[in-house]
Amino acid sequence: MSKFRILELCKEKGITQKDLAERIGMTPVGLAKAASGNPTVETLEKIAAGLGVEVVELFAKGGDFVAFVRRDGITHTFDTEDALIDYVEGLKTDKGARG
Image (cartoon, rainbow, N blue to C red; front, side, top):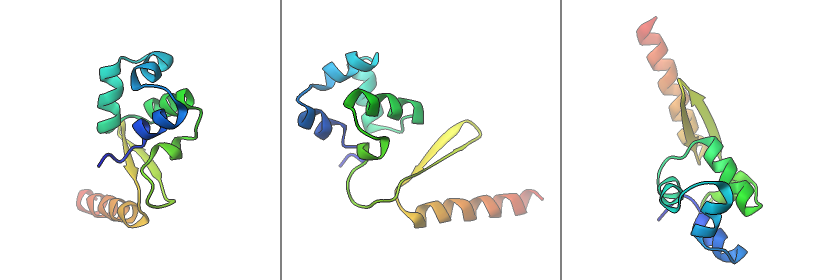
């Protein structure tokens, strides 16, 4: 199951993924890859704007927690507090190993 609700939101809005892709200046293949992969925050913002929803609405329902962390040019997305805490604890461990 995809972690994103892009197809579901397209259906709710009465548009196809191809229509959405054209609306936001992406190719349908690019949109499909973003929907099934790890898109950037900027891409998520474009998709959300094209659908007329907030970015958080793009995520699969299952909780009310979404966090983004950008580090070293990579954006990480977390959908649980535990996942975010694990990430931060890993940073502390990495910092201690380097220090």
